[in-house]
Image (cartoon, rainbow, N blue to C red; front, side):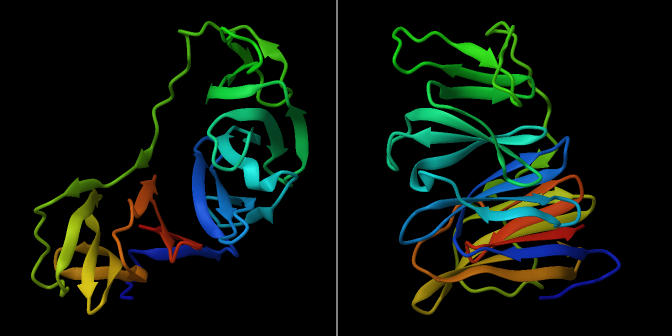
Length: 255
């Protein structure tokens, strides 16, 4: 990895026992929530860490019915987990709210299914009642709130994702093998961040680079020894570059 300290600084790198399955960002409170899963058992664990420092509030905490739990929403002070009928079903049969600072359960509701959420509340319904009757509840205490369905709050996001290009040409100073698939590209404050897959003998590896003009600041292997192309590899929030390495590690740089 090539690194120029005065421009780019690694903030944190956190490894997990399970595979990183899902990430949710809470921009106002500047934390990241992670759902990770054990490969064999598929049991879900949950982690919350500070986006700016990498400080972990709690790590890989599990709960009852962990195979059927999913990270649905990151609110200001709590996470919302859905309880599905079974691991392969998208239909939820209940909700659990947990404190972001310690992972303790704040409330549980087994008569609600999750529909959507925003910064003001959760839209839920009773799955036993048809036709569905949607209502809004408070994140922190699950009490009903008055809110019109067509008056949902949409807050602009500062999260930046790369664009995908089929014919993007890398500069000559970047050496690489045969590139497979699309190249992810993001331009930020004069820097260019790219991620791509390249053929390596009998398998594939995915690389991430950060460069400016003819200088490479980061050249990292996101994952190697794979047989198929991986999904989107990185994103930015404010001046933080974040990506998942080897499916079980979250890495952050200040750029």
